[in-house]
Image 1 (cartoon, one colour):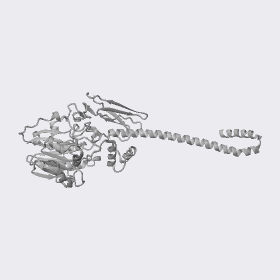
Image 2 (image 1 turned 180 degrees about the horizontal axis):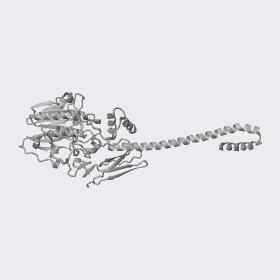
Image 3 (image 1 turned 60 degrees about the horizontal axis):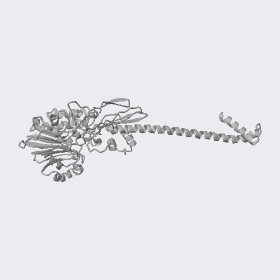
Image 4 (image 1 turned 90 degrees about the vertical axis):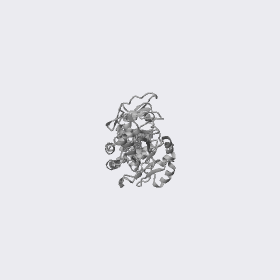
Length: 508
């Protein structure tokens, strides 16, 4: 109607400007086509304006949506950075979407996607076999998706307490640095709300200031008991035995790739031998192949002429164990005598006059706990029964990476790793059933019942520097010789691998 009225007014103006009588039908007929053209032009103008306005509205909406998506994506990446175990709980589809957001190559299976994302988020890449995410480094089961209305409180650092508070409209970040030389107060339990699910995330408790030179001397644990203290070998090891006391000194070390250790990691086995003067060295995760053994044996250690190696034949450059000794053993055996368990080079047994010595690299339950059932129903029982059979003739010493943190004191974040390989209730129960309940004694825990001492720290997230670790490496001995153990200790200052060596001094 407005356009018709406006058209009539234009017609009258046109007639007046041309001197046409306003009532003349012919004049109106001549001008009507021009009026129609003008009307079409007006409609087109209005249409273009409407379209332009709609496009601007859509662009604004798209911009807002993109900003919300970016904020949500940033939140997800931020939380995954502080809690990498979230990746393990995500589906392949979710992992691929996350790789797309982060600009990471998203090809391969779930393990490849997790590895790529961890490499993108972390400082280092881990070489640990079958490690969940874990990095075994402070994993927590947290839902991987979040809604726009979710509020999040995450990230408790050792020297910096960082709180991120997020709402749909704004994001604020507050940092509070603790003063060195003082004891930080125990941080309170924080509630994390995600996807309308409320879970308890315990803050990391640090007693003392973490020393970059000796971080293991600071108690770092999420559920510490009042009687627990951090491990400090400088003050906790007993005095040396007298020279006339007959004893044997055994060292054990998961080297996480022997060739890499010898080439570029800054601490050699020669230095370890000079410093510790051990009689026997047990190695795990050598990742050697049969063709490389002879060359390594010739140049590895002078004076240790007896060495016995086993390598994986089912997967080359994987697993592998060895025993290197300056004392010639009475007998040597490779594996457990069960073909299904003996293709990965995981066990070497040597017999000495007073005992059997086994070095073992127990299978990791792996990503998604895919080998958990195999481990707890087949491998552990087989190893425990093998040790009991040997024990019929003389005492047994088992050492190595047993890939299980037995108790909560043996891992810095028990609750966050309850379904992580190495700390599942199934593995811990199996450790108890197949070894401790059969009469084998955990020598370190016997000597240090209330000491928090770790032997493994994941490469990512500076776990060694912040002492967020696991105790996965052991000396288990027959009960009959447990009282003859003079010292069971860890060398946390040796950091050329993600595991530190551990030692046993046994009086003979």
